[in-house]
Length: 225
Figure 1 (cartoon, rainbow, N blue to C red):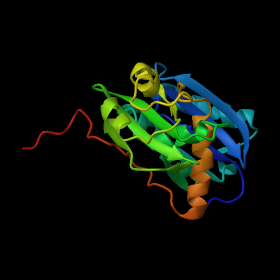
Figure 2: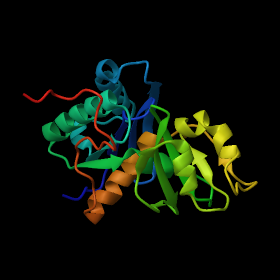
Figure 3: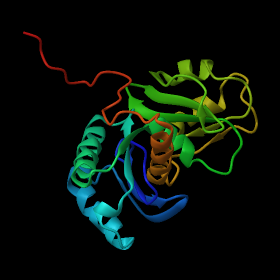
């Protein structure tokens, strides 16, 4: 179901900085972000109420909703999905799943270089995606950063995400590194980018399902008996 005209709610709970934004076309009506240390399970719904009130809207005024579905933090993804799915069902609006890596890449603005998004995946690995002109230029992966670097093309690249910051030294020493390489942290506006990408995907019929999207299985699994 495509989104009608009107504001879209974007929610990102998959990264270290939970974000919520209301976007109408390209205009950000209201936005809030807080660090993962503030549990999304306790703060997401109150913040949603504040965001809607700040924009003078009710949930029924939303045209659609969008949420990052991963890769990212296991608990955060599940909390965000459960909350946004419940809200979408209550107001009868379409819900789009959005790749976390794509949302981070879309939040990086004002740069023509390709973007390598690295999110810290623990275990000395990163969740990685490579984007050119806002379009994924290959499959997303979870791997040691040295292996991800080996698969990147030569030329200047903008590296974004908390994983890029953690492994900035390795990036700086990569074989064939270009002087114009830049390492940045998590860009602002990931939730707003989620809303924009969600609307585009709903209109194109390419939205991801609103279900967790893991690049590796969670640490805790049910024992087989």
